[in-house]
Image (tube, rainbow, N blue to C red; front, side, top):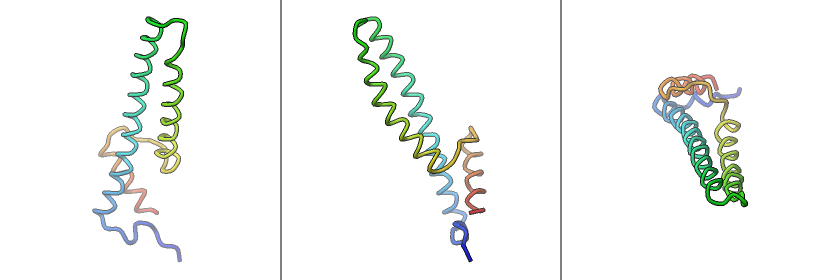
Amino acid sequence: MEKNLCDNMSEENLYSLAEKRVDEKIGFYHHLYSFIAVNLILAVINVLFSKGSWWFLWVTFFWGIGLVSHFIKTFIVFEKFEEKHRDKMIEKEMEKLRKE
């Protein structure tokens, strides 16, 4: 008989695991917002001060690789993001873990 992940976990451990997963999801969104903001600023600086060279694209490309790997780790390895509020997300993760 196959055992669920939650069969041997206490509520505290389950909450901690759900909290960790939610924090990873929130961390990805912070990373994404930083990526967008910084690259927009770099693009403006590039256009204003060095029009012939598109150097900001190198930053965007390599940082984008890191962002994609963060996305895969957060959402493909775990699951899709559905809730926006941390407490609701934690409760949802706990429910999913109880079913595993």
